[in-house]
Length: 397
Ligand code: PLP
Image (cartoon, rainbow, N blue to C red; front, side, top):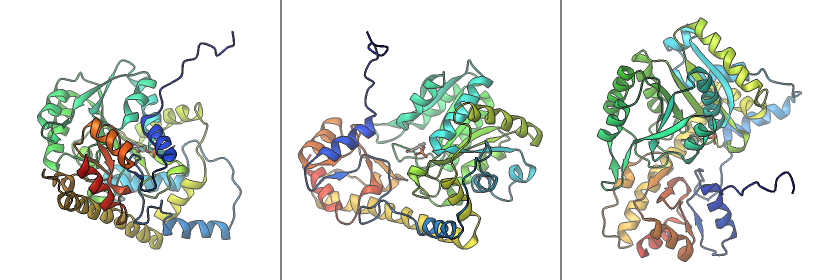
């Protein structure tokens, strides 16, 4: 008997498992629409020019790699605050936001979850049905009971907003509600500004704890536009959590650059919250890595590079929208009778295509077109070379 003889094999991560299957597929026409990654029109992961330019300045003036402070690079945390809340916003000016540099958006969520578990050990967590597949596992592993609120309605291929509101209304005070700030993953459907107002009213009336997951700021309508929902929560006088990810918006997936911001009642409270977040970090991984954070802080802090970043992010956003339109037009041209125009109403990197599990399996096995069994496809992986093949393949299933 070895120490590990009773260890069970854990299930494969559904998305990464799909990736392995894709890599092993010998079909030369194969297309990977499974992962949540932006590819350019040549099917390549972009290395943004703003990133390259800043890295060049780093190479020109190399620095030693000491430990960062537990909460990360101060200029990075300040840049995140400005991006999320607005540079001249009241929360930033009054100093009542506690922000830490985290290992990607996932890290921001996990630090927040661990802190919340200490703060309110008996709270439940509500996530959207469906949600990013890691939300449930992450909050469950942090010790929470995770349930869901209604969100997507497969029968109408749209949102069940009445169901969402009813489920939030029925939640006990203190329940943590995970909300996608923009570009809902996986459905691509966001609620409207007026619907956000209704959600905020319920969150406030019922004393729920909002946790906004902002993994795609800038991929919806623009950086400010996508951040506007944060302003609504501020205006409502709520305290809340926001996780940030730069994986997609800077195409820095492997550098693990993200953050957690907690809006508190005042500056003094924010400093106490920050001290607790630091304990969570210190006892997990001590302090964050230097490189990715330095790039993001450097780009956001330099007016020229920042303008370049905004332009490059804008290009990604515009290209995804163009691909949505091409997908709708291409499916029609390929003979799909159903109205697929809902794809252009969706926003962000993903589309819930409405295809069944059987259809997704056939797409994979017969055509080498990979999406998740739920019908989610990454529109950001479509390009002018693979779109016709994808449309024709979908039309055949
Ligand atoms: N939250 C959502 C909704 C996501 O879609 C993702 C990434 O796919 C993340 C968080 C995690 O981001 P990161 O890769 O920066 O950890």
